[in-house]
Amino acid sequence: MSWFIPVLIVLATVAFMEFFSWWVHKYVMHGWGWGWHRSHHEPHNDALEKNDLFVVVFSGLSILMFWIGANLWTPLFWVATGTTVYGVLYFLAHDGLVHQRWPFRYVPKSGYLKRLYQAHRLHHAVKGKDGCVSFGFVWAPPIGALKEQLKRNRDAMTLQMYESEEEALGSVQADSGRS
Image (tube, rainbow, N blue to C red; front, side, top):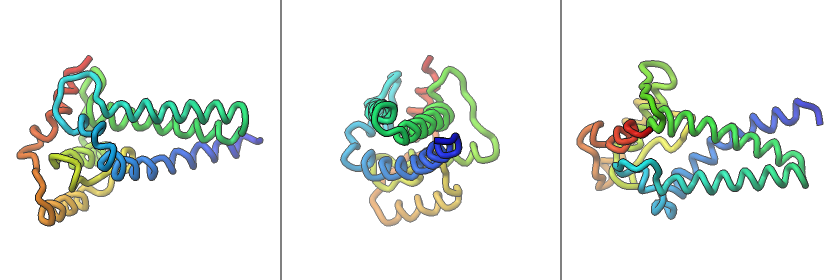
């Protein structure tokens, strides 16, 4: 197998993982998996969340794919590499940039990182699992479109909204004090 095919598999897997993660976030985490994911939407001062169990599950699946790829079917090794690359991007963008689960604070002032940061903030504007917007982790829709969708959701549903960004981001601010 030339280097081109493995690189193509890794890149295609990284791209696919954003769509897959969007689907899992919207339909599993905000559906039957809310029991674990709820911890991520509620303020706390703990170093870990029950939501982190999703990382354990998906890491286990990647390890299994690495084993199968190394021992039985080589292309799956490159798929596992792509899921791992996506996992690193997820950690940097979501756990690091957005939720400040690292020992320093950086809030982007412009560009795509600011849009990603704001999109996930809007995701946390709703109390509870219903009516949220922006379920991606690395790709963020335009902020204006997300605000319009959030307003439509609020008007169509009986949503409990946070009164301020500070209240909505209580768990994020608690996260910034972690070491």
